Length: 222
Image (cartoon, rainbow, N blue to C red; front, side, top):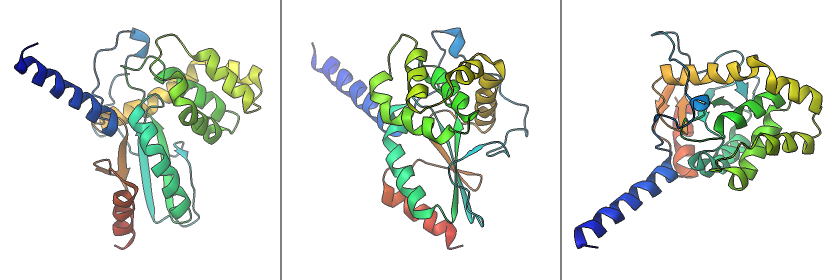
């Protein structure tokens, strides 16, 4: 291999690492039409948070809202998840944390995972399945075969009513709920995951807990 080709290969490897670390996963043409993103909403219709958005914290007197558009198969979302959990513990009585689905077309099981989480939400167990997906991401992420049975196993481990879970997975309204979040994200020009908004303002994803905490503290001090 020539020196120029070696340099090109090294550069490509660096770009791949940065993409995984910071979630710069662009919306690309999917290999499977089933994973295709829904059409974007009409201009002005997209909203950062809605009444039915899944709230991980709900303080009585919320001073700030942090919204994350996420993909359960996204390694960068998995990497930032511990930071989000730590911030929830630190600010749960002052800040509302919201999780919104944004499955990326390049991930074979991201939409299946989101549907599984939404099916669990039908039984009031959104947060439990949300946590389960991130805790197990390395076991099923990036696999090409459907992980629907694996996710059903998680539902069983969590003690969900599996008949109700199966019915929810089959119900077109469950996937439509996932697509509704995704449509909002597309309308807000979300192009990769994780993407965060603070009180409706999109921010670059902080690289550390300290950087994220500083942003929240600055907003709360206003």
